[in-house]
Image 1: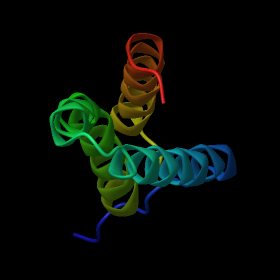
Image 2: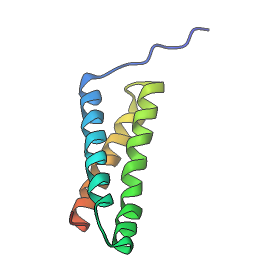
Image 3: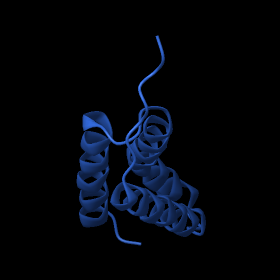
Image 4: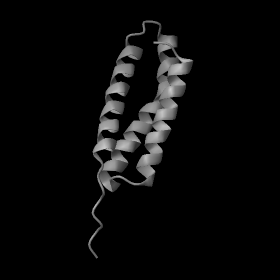
Length: 89
């Protein structure tokens, strides 16, 4: 049986590209922190955000626009908001 065609969304792709850029920027800012203890704390706190973006990208590539990718994008948005509220860069 042929596999279903995955549904794509230009808006989702734009949101994913913006999320990737933001993760790259914040990772660079964290890597610029000189104090290793503080840097480690920030990296640990930011790991969930990075994992959400990686999962979002991988799921979108395999499944396209679906409930899981929408939920992962919302998860990313809440995690990045929480990170920005708790940590100053």
